[in-house]
Image (cartoon, rainbow, N blue to C red; front, side):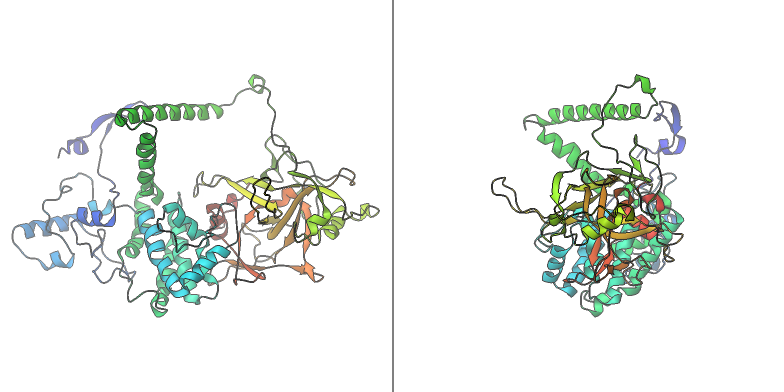
Length: 583
């Protein structure tokens, strides 16, 4: 093996087209566990990174890292016929000399990277944690809970449960993680809930694209919570006897490896597996299956050319061009008209060019999806089930319009949804940039239009409020409260003042402290005068969606505010990142 370049350097053209002397070194090795053990020359009942004993991998203890010089020394003595107890104690295999013996500036034992897909999402979570919980709760009960999980935009609904699924992908594992803690929390032992919470929080922290000392400390604490409570799985007979599992032990090294290499997503084996689809399978499908290698090569060259030109166009869009040089265009999105805000509403002006409304980037269809929906239908349980719609509308119009009274036969234009553009934050990157809040009534099946029945989608959301809350004061959640958005509408033209788009909401109780067991905020429906606490607000007071999970299955009284529904929600609730909210 020629390693001269790593010792003396070699001229290379860099990304800025400049020629520099570069020392290529062996820095990272992405492989599964058996291959890691093979490369590290250790037995598969050991760890390729540290010297943990074969029966101590589930103890969550600190163990010395493998030393490259010492390992080579012991292997050399073993090759010469000398027996050392350390050779057996460290679980070394008699492979000499390994290919990495003389690699410059490299340590093979510190070159193995975290594998989010196989170690964490598929391994510890799906193959172990889900199996243990299913064994305790019961397969049918787990399927029923997945079916009963509330529908939420951006969260997959497993309408048939999970027991019948034979093949899983990394994306499905991560979708399960979004709701699994809420699924388990109902009626489970506190230690079991804490263990599940610790492992899922760890998975979310480990998947962040950018880390700070705060996130790494929180990731360590999450792993500690899991290990402090994992014995409950054995006590409840979800796990047979021990946790001496290589993938569970591998999590102990994540903090060290992230500090060494950077965020774990850069070494995720999900990336090369995805590239196999993009560069091999899709290319083959684009051919006529005859002389396909040549056709695949041409297809890839064309894809690269398109990608380069797309990148160039994206760069051009970032340049500042004088407005006079731009062609006149029309927008397809109507700016929200100014409203008469309630005392709790924001007083910020509306930027019609960027559609920044009350500090929220909000988009609404130009015209309502339905033009003439009667108040009777809005109030009806077969419609939007907004039982306090008329009283709330009277209150919103205020005492200055006391001579005008809304009637049940009045008709309103209604929108199906309002969307928000979530900001790009380093921890999440460009993923999940759109957030929707839906407010649609159930639609019956139509044989003439060949349309199946559609259930109602009445999402919950975080709402700006002027109320003071000592529990959230000074935090990212200050001034926010959860409510269910049941109607997004505009009033008829003959209404006084003709306010802009409005939303009918029903409040939940104010946020307090996260629960010590599941880590979620616990909420219940607010009531006034033996009915829901309802209010009509300008639509620009809606901040983003909020997913609620029933605390007890089959009841509609208490709920858990899901902090795992998406990456931005996790950063908001777990890290207190106010910049994860639409701005």
